[in-house]
Each structure stands twice: as structure tokens, then as C-alpha cells.
Image (cartoon, rainbow, N blue to C red):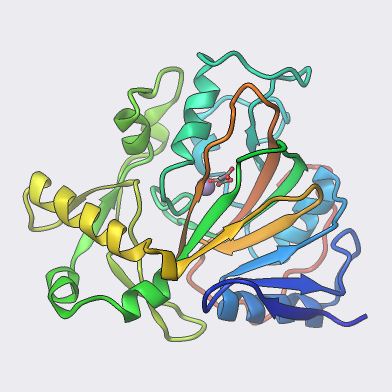
Length: 299
Ligand code: OGA
Ligand code: MN
């Protein structure tokens, strides 16, 4: 069966079929997926069954791996920094107590963000795989920043055109009162990115915002924060949002250059286990997929 894509969201997001991601895909299939990403920005692959190594091998076809926040973390439960451990459990599979610092990071994921926007290079594609999902809650929402940009009122557009925002990894965590205890904050100094970016593959323009932003060049901090809040509110209106309801074995890929995402509330005392691999945004379109390589020796 050939790869096919069926739209599932409002003007973006599609469900892929006809592919088993455990297999080593041809270069043509990888390019087809990459083109579909450039069109739909979010792709859902249902009914997959991926080992850690299979997931990383697939991810690496699209670019170098992004380590993201793990640059400031110690090696965790999964034993490798190439995965973001999106799970509220410990090494024995037991649900963490509510005051465990790791849960703070998972709660911060419930604020609209773009993965690794706080580092240089930022993230391109995130690939989140569902190993265990709660019966209720814990969906993930995605918002299309290309459509939000296209619909931006002229006054907002004029306020941000040519300006950059500062993104800081621990800004949202600080806002939650969680702080950065136990982390090497020096590994992730703040970075600046234009608020409006042009996607190299399609030439489309997109907004680059989210909860990691804390300042805008040429504005006072309060003025910048009010504007960032207004932009975020505008850009995450329902007409720009796809809500994903997880099933076991889903792999969802999203383009962090042009979407924001957030987790939805669930009972943190109930097990929810996902793992994310991520590629770096090198700024260069994928002309040629990277060759398959076994990932058993890490990145
Ligand atoms: C992530 C993330 C949200 C969720 O994996 O980067 O933000 O719903 N996840 O778990
Ligand atoms: Mn995220």
C-alpha cells in the first residue's frame, strides 16, 4: 500500500496511511513525508509499534537530532538524551508523586510552545510516540502559525514586522513557580528569533511565538509581554487548532517552525507515557534524506 494522507484538521494536519515506520523507508518515501509535512505541518501515523532505536533511526532521516532541554538535564529514566521523556513515571514504571520536579516540566508542556525555540538551532520536527495513554484527558492541541500569520490584523502585523523576540528555556517554568532547580541553566542561554519567519521549503510566512518568549527588541518588557500575550491569544483561536486524541501506537510529527502545541489536562496520578525524538532546524530544506543508520550507539 502506498503512502497516503487524509486531512484531519482545519486547513492543516493530516493522517498518514500505508507505511510501517519500523521498516527502513526508501528515500522517496522520506521525501514524500517531508513534502507532506511542509503542506500539513502535523502528521498522524496510527497503529505503529516502535522500539526506541526504530524511532530514532526514522527521526534521523530528517536531520540531526535535537537534544533540547536535555542539554540542561542529567540522563533520565530512558537512559539517553536523544529522547524527551514525556511520561509521569519513574524508572520502575510507577507514577511519580505530585510534587516530583519532573511533573513541573510536564505541566509546562500544557502551555502553548514550540519545542526548543529557546536554543540555537531550534527544533524542526518533533516526533511523539504514545506508549501508554490515560482513559480520559491528555489530548494534544496544535495551532497553525502560518494560517495565524495570514489572518493577522494589519496593526498587529505592523507592530511586529522586523522585530525579534527573546526565547528562554526556563521562562515558562519560572512562571509556573517551578524554577530551574537541579538544572544546568548555563547550558541554555536565551536566544533571539524574528517574530515573523519565512519557511525555506514553501516560502510561506509564519509567526514564531509561544511561552518561551519573554522580551521583544526595542520594547519595554511589560509592553513586550502584553503584545506577546495578545499575539498568542490571536494565533491559538479555534479556527487554527487541531486537537489530537491519542491512541496507543500513535506517532505524531509536527513542524515546530510553524506550529505551536500544548498538552491538555489529565489526572497526573494516572499513568501517561510518551516519548519524543526531535530534529534540529538547520535552515536547509531536505533535498536528500539522510541515510539509514542504526542508532544503538546513540546520536
Ligand atoms: C512535547 C509536548 C505535549 C503533550 O512532547 O513536546 O509538549 O501532550 N507534549 O504531552
Ligand atoms: Mn513540546
